[in-house]
Length: 114
Image (cartoon, rainbow, N blue to C red):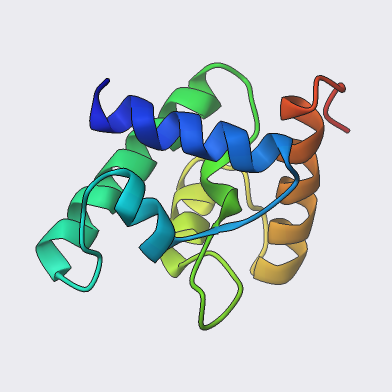
């Protein structure tokens, strides 16, 4: 199984459980040490690729379930991605996180996104 597939499967599992996963925990799934900047960058690249795939498929941003453990929020990179792709119209990161998380949970629970 590829690293991307392992990360994707973990995100789907977390979304179906209506949970959240830290970058550190996700790093373990991908066999990456996120304390190492180069390895963290590699994980972020995987998440960006997965996010782009979700956007192109018309689905909500699955990587929204990945949070910084210290902030209990996604990193700034997720919000930059959302703005770049027209998903986030204003600067309300908490509001976007809350709404997108609900959409991801609904999508992966088999319910229509709201």
